[in-house]
Image 1: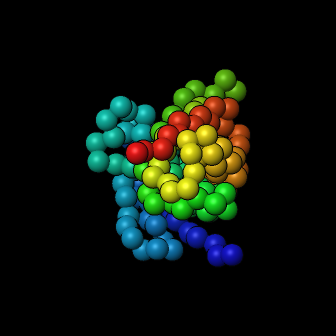
Image 2: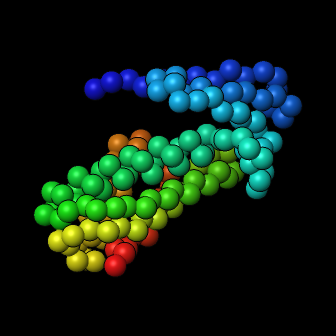
Length: 147
């Protein structure tokens, strides 16, 4: 399996510094980061590690769910997956990811709601990014079929 690479060029201290994250393997872009904007409610046009984790989790989860639905005898038509990643205080000091909420709305042929939710839970437990984030205390899932 391949290795993917991103890099960050950072200048300055935590509060007054800033950086640029480059998605090196794909070459699709370079994005600004700063801690004050990371910790603010309004990102002000910058990304954050949490947003990048959310992107990784939602895309990985979508792929895993597609396979699990097919393995269960369903036909995946469309998924809309959102990952909300929360940064909060770590009781041991500093900050940590304190919660992730996955929300999926799916259009699937051949499975009822209960079977879809079972597949959704399996994807939550089994996608590689979920496994990588196993240290997060609170990863929740809200899954529903769309009619």
